[in-house]
Image (cartoon, rainbow, N blue to C red; front, side, top):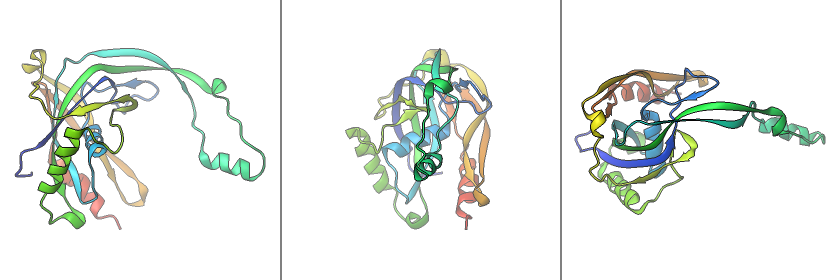
Length: 228
């Protein structure tokens, strides 16, 4: 664990959906942001190949509220290779979304706000670097509202706003509650042969705070570093 105090980023939005992977056809959100979603938000604000993000804690700053709605979606995706092949043969390609449309239910979160606390972990060619440089750049980018792309809360259509920590704490209704969240997705471990192995952990929301097991990062990163 880093000897430095964690960097903090406040994120909020109207809706969020951190989909539970055991739900196939319908989207059902975890009650809290997942560590991998938090890492994605941090990387949207600032990332370099010389370091990795280690999320320490995720604080829930607003009461957990849900929203249920139906959306029109399509059943299949159009493969670019199939379209390219059709045009190369001079056949053209037609796809009518109305013929492939379906309605799917989403159980999302509404009016959410979180505080992400994370460490900068130098590695690879930057393993000997002082993380202070990256920490300072991150703080400046957060203050100016700069990002590589707009961060989102689980689904790309649920855009996230972000800013510096402002002293917000979990609401009173969560302050004295400990709630098991079941198996939560931690991250994906990339293995040899192009296989992707999802890593889960037993998540628990204690007083409005999700603590992320630090040892799981060693397991995921070690698998990545041994790739040929």
